[in-house]
Image 1 (cartoon, one colour):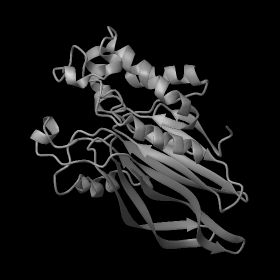
Image 2: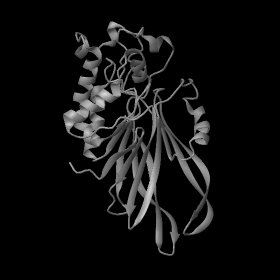
Image 3: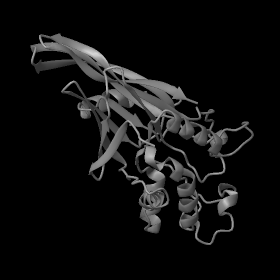
Image 4: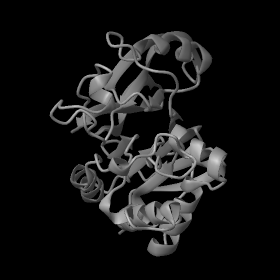
Length: 299
């Protein structure tokens, strides 16, 4: 399938997505996801497949920000339990190989559409305690099965989107970070937004997972712009996104760690990002556009 975009690796945690633009009316879809916990019995594979099939239908891409694996059933993990093992891995003597091989088979049909796969704290824990990099192994195997290069990302990293139309080039910067800490019951992890905005001023979009919450918060900014139209003050928007999870730990509320901690049901799914060119500032030679992101729930 010929896609209207392509991805290249600039550094180990920086990737560039070149958008193919034929006119200023074009648009591109990307699924922002995280915390799939694919090997956990509570992971919703049907919903995953539904969304990935929609990615293919839209000729879009998908970006994962970590904890694609749960990987808590290794011998070194004190959290392991028989309830945490899916049927596919129950009798496997090579537990980590088994979860990688199963995930690679599941995601390989969508490898061409993958921007990159980031790392989360579950993958980091396995690397620390078992000396194997699940994300690296998954990307290698997906690439082998699909014949399409799949890029691993970092715990944090960047994706730069660019589009060229009528000899003009437009760009948008996305910062991803798996996440840290917890989400308070009332604030939903929103209290970090102002701090991140100050520390990461070059990002147009900041995407995180980890806390299994889903929301989008726009933050208006004042910018000093200097271009062919001269110097002026403009306002723009930085978007902060939490992507949700595909793991249903609450279920019917009967019991389990999540319920015992008094935690609530979480939104299942991910977030769609639609990129398009919007009119910016008029100048003597025509109209300047900007690459803008819009967000929609994928639930």
